[in-house]
Image (cartoon, rainbow, N blue to C red):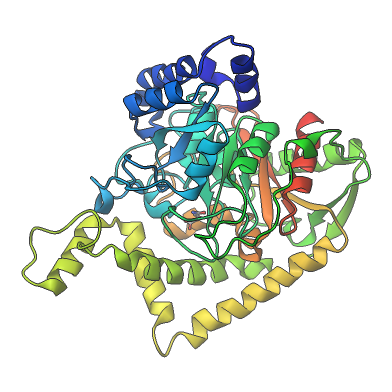
Length: 470
Ligand code: GLN
């Protein structure tokens, strides 16, 4: 077994006992990258020298793979886009600075859908990532590189981002624990913005304890991100002690009972997860999210609208790619963007610009904001009677590369994760089982999602841990 197959807690224990050094741990990640990246393709780039130097300078530190939209000083930060090819970060994102202070070092840049738009990592303009459980299949997305690296044992743990499901769905596809923190729990300073009212950074890890440790390291108020309130960060790892489902009230969503398009094996595993909670002493309570059915529509107005504004900064002047075919400032903008952005990013910019345009703003954007409020209230009401809501993570297990070509079908991957993103609450993905192998499909991992209220991560970790142990 390679050292980097260990999780965070286990690696720290080995380091503390002097069984191996941080340098050896980093070297094991490098060996694994050399050996497996040709097939799994989790990493886009790996600066061996920097990672080894950081290990030497920080004995006891644990390496973490970083999604390629989080800035690490001196490293590329491409967002898997041609428009940022060649860009090198001049500074560390707050999450990276915090991670370093807490005994972690960034090691390797992992692949993603371009600008985090997608659910399969197939929208990366810079590389192909495969699911380590079946190389013909996708790892999910947009944090597909993070999930594949964790799932393949090519890193100890990873950072990803989640706007509508981008940590949870790939975690489900690659058998990882993933956590989307509450909106405002983690600073986005230095994290390339996709949809600023939704984006959050979070951990992808091998178990719940590791996710708790890593989130504890990066969470908290940051002067550089005004959306992070000054609320103390509980000791998430300590919250796991004595974790139990006994007496917990777990909600199941009435509207999801007979939902169309749910893979029968995912349904079986999600039903079994509910039964496991009950057997472990939880009380199962039906809750209603009456406006969840509008969540996809609302998300695909709000997220593209915000993306169209955020991506305006990539104009060929300030960062990255500049068209060589421009004659004036207008063609410099349009050609740089036409050459630099991929098709899905262009689709989002066009949709977002449309819904924000005068004459359509009220009909789309303003109305979507109102429905978003109703969705948030649905969750508030549900959490008045339950500790957590349990749902499938994604409607299907990992699908084959090239199998989903229609954007709307791709968008449906986030059916179960988008409502909680719009509500700003926290949610985890926890491995729950494997599909039965058939001639068409090998056994594939499937995760379930636990959702807790805003800033209730300690409870979320405790429930997720008790489920993991059940
Ligand atoms: N799959 C969703 C999208 O394409 C969510 C992506 C994300 O969470 N970053 O927008």
